[in-house]
Amino acid sequence: MITLSVIKADIGGYVGHSSSHPDILVLAEEKLMEAKKEGLLVDYHVTRCGDDLQLIMTHEQGEDNARVHQLAWDTFIAGTELAKKLSLYGAGQDLLADAFSGNVKAMGPGVAEMEFKERPSEPVIIFMADKTSAGAWNLPLYKMFADPFNTIGLVIAPTLQSGFAFEVHDIKENKKIVFNTPEEIYSMLVFIGAPSRFVVKSVHHRETGNIGAVSSTQRLALIAGRYVGKDDPVCVVRAQGEFPAVGEVLEPFSHPALVEGWMRGSHHGPLMPVAIEQSNPSRFDGPPRVIAAGFQLADGILIGPRDMFDDPSFDEARRLANLAGEYMRRHGPFEPHRLPLDEMEYTTMPQVMKKLEGRFTNLD
Image 1 (cartoon, helix red, strand yellow):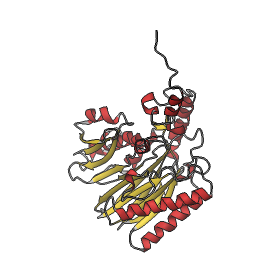
Image 2: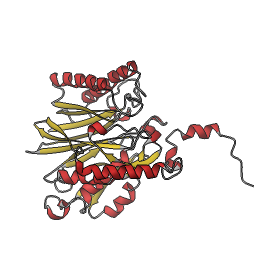
Image 3: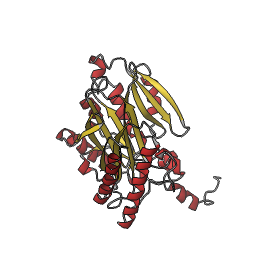
Image 4: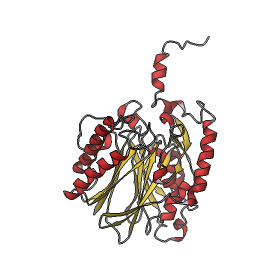
């Protein structure tokens, strides 16, 4: 069995919230290289999406392993110290605790992990997003694993026709439910169509029980009790065989769907698929970006990555994202560009409300 762990954190932006400093990536590379030499990791890859440091690791320690999570935490702490020396913006903003307590999930960093038996050919796509929240994966995962207009394999591939089980988390009530598709699609859509509260955590093949996808569901504001930045989620998807093909996994991103996030985590904007080098959200700290790193696993070794959105076939999606972004920006501080009030309570708006306390009076 191999475990694939993707753990990310925003530990300092260069410049502002737009990108990651190269020295931070070098430092993380050194930390993970040492862990591989010591035998903790089978392999690793360090990258970034916008201002988020992304640690991609394979190992045989299983999910939620304290040593692997400690490695990630120590890497983020060391990166934060370097970020402070470089005067990077928001240094360590995703680190919400003073000391490691066995698992980074409740400490700020985003985590997506899956343990599985490696197939003879194991293609894996790792999606990483910046300036958006965990619910951004709801629509893409639905389209990949439940929509035959996206995934023709659901119609013509016998290995996919048994359907998939979606584990959905209610991140405000701390509850979960599993929906079986295709027969429970309508009921499931009632919930995952509200991505600010209900988030697809994982997808399993119903016949084999094998895991096909897993996402990070950490909501920073709910952990911290205040606005500390957007969640910038990650998602791992296995492809081919009993799962959608690589092209079917990527296809949902040909439509830059509106997601919450963007400036100060307070706006809706299009999720733009870009090459890794283009994941530098600058306009109004956006629009939100998503990158896709493709790997072939070989006995836990990460063969890759291939930059899956570095492809002119996604040019139209990027053009449409710019048009949609332009349209949304013209609304300024008005909804639907700005988030609705029930979501604004997790931004900086409560400070404004507190300042105006006592100025609201009853209507005659």
